[in-house]
Image (cartoon, rainbow, N blue to C red; front, side):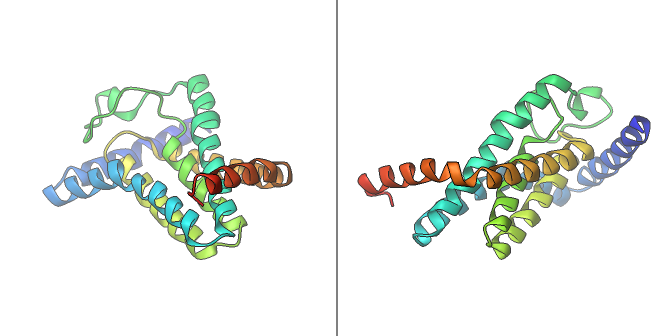
Length: 191
């Protein structure tokens, strides 16, 4: 089973990396998506925070799910597995600069899929679909530029969905935290 996953990873990684490296347009487009598209997430969360009173808890829940998936879950798994990045093998051309940290799982995918699934569970289905589309674009771009294997993105997405589901299960006790943060924001005129 592991051999099949590694073969899948290598085949798709080489194909996407070669394609991204084949022309100036395909070199610039994945680089932009892999490095900068992630910055839409905080902008989207800020817009959601200020849009309506009831969306503040949705924004907090999604942010919390994303941060737990990224900073805690993916970090722990990454340090335990410690899979090198694809460009470290020498077979893949690194198209963006990235430190040689762990590759598995993708913390970008974990963060974005946690946001997207949290929005889905909160009833913000259109926003969730938009976040999932952006997540897939960023994931594909990060494979193409040589910083992730496909299985890193897939597992990161699964991890993000799982964390968002856990945060949803803990929603009742977390309401205390959400209300506390909203009250602080109101007191300093940020809500």
